[in-house]
Amino acid sequence: MVARFTSRAAWQAVASATIPRSLAQTRGFASTLQREEKRTAIITGASRGIGKSIALRLARDGYDLCINDVEANKQGIDDVVSQVKSAGVNAIGAVGDVSDLSQVEAVIQKSVKKLGPLNTMIANAGIAQVKPLLDLTTEDFERMFRINVFGVQNCYSAAARQIISQGNATAEAPCKMIAAASIVAFKPFALLSHYSASKWAVRGLTQAYAMEMAEHHITVNSYAPGIVGTAMWDLIDEELGKKRGNDLGQVIKKGETIKKYTDELIALGRVSVPEDVAKLVSFLASHDSDYVTGQCQVVDGGIIFT
Ligand SMILES: NC(=O)c1ccc[n+]([C@@H]2O[C@H](COP(=O)([O-])OP(=O)(O)OC[C@H]3O[C@@H](n4cnc5c(N)ncnc54)[C@H](O)[C@@H]3O)[C@@H](O)[C@H]2O)c1
Image (tube, rainbow, N blue to C red; front, side, top):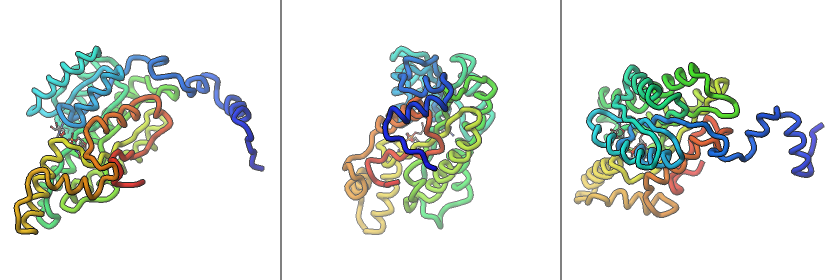
């Protein structure tokens, strides 16, 4: 027979009888700060754009941070590190290419040595390329998957091994792995085909990791931004504009394509800013999302409805 609980009090009585007391206490509404140990996070591709915004937000949340990017963006890494430090938390920079597992492992080792045990890995780094499917070369496809998919796999696998070896992830305080997907993980954009496929792969990998990491008390989720005004969308705007210009036989000015997409696609009627995404990642990194795993959470102002 199915039991029906007519009041909240009756439900709570059953819940507290079936959940061990320590869990019942921590699974209440204690704020992160009230019960929290010092937490550390690594953010890849964080010298600019969405990654930088996530870093500034997690600094506000009290995390010590390891800021990663490629060598070419070392200046950006240093700038973000000093901005994070001025928010009152500790931060280090760590150059490394996420497509190379040994470099990701070195970033993690540096972070653990300087900041302490790892709690949160944010695999944010990614690239985009605008090209018609039939013009794509094997090299185009490989580069996209090396960074966007192997990069996430390298971050997830190396971070999971580190967290498991530390033994600091518990049912009451799970560790977190989070990756950048995209709305194109739900519906591809034409001319962004291999980028879209790479983000579908991130979504799938995240679901698989969520299943296998649950027993290790690690939750695994991804975030799916829509159209965010960063260097990445500058490139997409320019390249899509050229293609539309060629088709229409006219010059499409910089910014016109992103405006067209905004007007036609985004329910809330404005392009996203990186801070929109950082707010969601802050939630996914916090204990407020401890019961969320395997999700690809859209943050797009209303383009894709899941
Ligand atoms: N901008 C958007 O509209 C949008 C939408 C959906 C998803 N995303 C995703 O969000 C993430 C961040 O995007 P963004 O808009 O801030 O882009 P961005 O180009 O401004 O920043 C990406 C950063 O990743 C770094 N990076 C690239 N390859 C790397 C590598 N191999 N190793 C380490 N770092 C590397 C770059 O140097 C750069 O600093 C990406 O994964 C992107 O695909 C962006």
